[in-house]
Length: 200
Image (cartoon, rainbow, N blue to C red; front, side, top):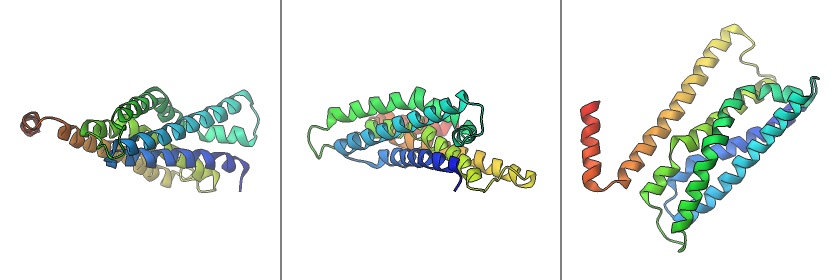
C-alpha cells in the first residue's frame, strides 16, 4: 500500500460517513434522534474539514514528493466542495441541531416536517456527498486504478462523475421539496401544487 493512500483512506472514510449520516437525517421522525444524529454529523464534518485542511497545508508548505505532498495533490478535486461544506453546510448543521434541540425535551417528540425539510436541504447533504465522491476520485489513483490516465477511459469516467453529481443534486432537491410541501398548511400546499403544475 502506498504511503499517500494511508493518508487518503481515513479522509475518504470520514467524508463517506458524513455523507451517509446526512442522507439519513430526513428519515428520522423523532426530534431527539435528529438532534443526536446531527451532533454526530457535526463531529464528522469538522473532523473531515480539519484533516483535509491539515493535509493541504502540509502539502503546500513543502515542494517535495513525500506521501503528504502526493496526498495533497490528489485532494485538488475535493477542495471546492469542501469549501462549500465549510461555508454553507456547517452553519446549516448548527441551525438544524439547535432547532431539533428545541423539540427534544421529551424522548418521543415527533420531528416537525419543517425540521425534516431543513435536514433534507440540498446544501447539507449534497456538498458532503460530492466531497465524498471527490475523495473516492483521489483514492482510486492512489490504489493503482487511475481512470483518467487513459484518454479512452477518461472521457466516460468524467461523464459518469458529472452525471452522478447531477443525480445527487436532483435527488436532494426533490426530497427537500416534498418535505417542505408537507410542512405547509393544507390550503397552501394545494395551491403550491397547482402553481407547480401550471408552470411545468
